[in-house]
Figure (cartoon, rainbow, N blue to C red):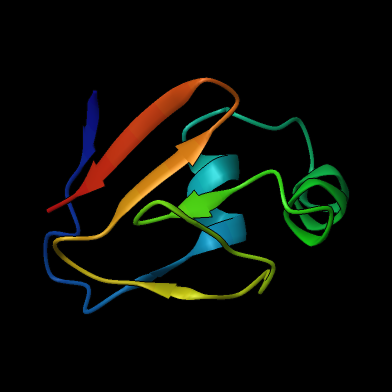
Length: 69
């Protein structure tokens, strides 16, 4: 499982996280794949492209898990 540190941020949006970690090539790809239900937030499908992720959340996408710290 990967870890993403928020540092001084309160949250990061789901689409930005996927782009930042290189899990998608473009913002458009992130939008389509999230809207299609390919992302799981804490084990449940998440279709909100700009869902705010906070410390303690776990994202599953493309066979990888990312813990938000």
